Length: 110
Ligand SMILES: [Zn+2]
Image (cartoon, rainbow, N blue to C red; front, side):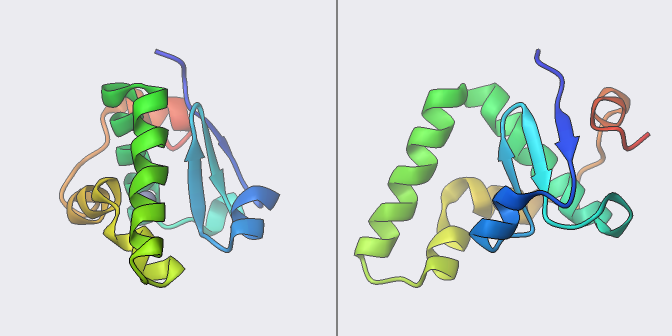
């Protein structure tokens, strides 16, 4: 596995208007490190697990395909993002999982 590299106060999520984005192996946050909430950290780590499970191409290919399908169907950018299956899973699980010690260590959370 490639270790996750967390970056903070980053221009990419800020430019996209989102709190965070996983561009594996990078986990990019809009906010400074001390302002990132644990639930957001967990949510992003679930995306890391999804990328590792599906593989980079399949994860991002399906993610973007679902997003644009929803947008073409008339949904707002925000709603389309939320309705992506990977996001549904991540929102559903973010408050129910514990990060493993290895995950905490590689993200610098431990
Ligand atoms: Zn997400």
